[in-house]
Length: 173
Image (tube, rainbow, N blue to C red; front, side):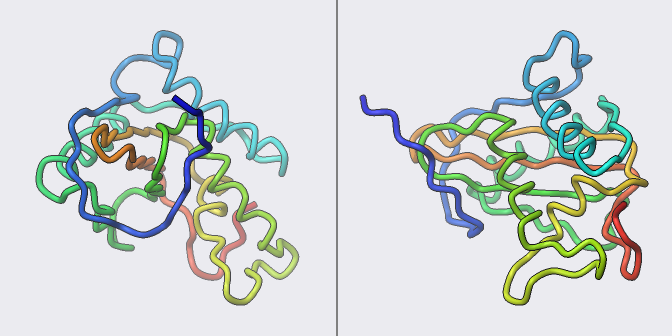
């Protein structure tokens, strides 16, 4: 079977999910996915001089419950996470081969190209909010999980951040 780079999209499609892979309750030292999510986040944070995040079992369990809910009840659509949530959140829907935690975070971090730190603004017609959440200085904890849609070869990845970032009028770092 040919190895194809996944087509990453930011649109929700109705899909059936047949398995869930979760970076959840184990400490990062014994959970490769947790370590990978954390390392990718902390690399992006170090690049702009922000202290590293710590892995949170509580947040990982919350994202695990949410991706399972999306798998079981919402056909792999994006979760409806409101701005009033007690956690910050990033999501990524990917089509193609499964995506690693590093690929997920790298996709969010690519928004850095459109972010203007001195003006704390984003280039018109682009989004920067998932990048700024990754590097938000006041966020201290991270927990992530991924649902894999085997039949459709797609996945939904969600990370929660505590405390949440992207406070209007505040610079991320």
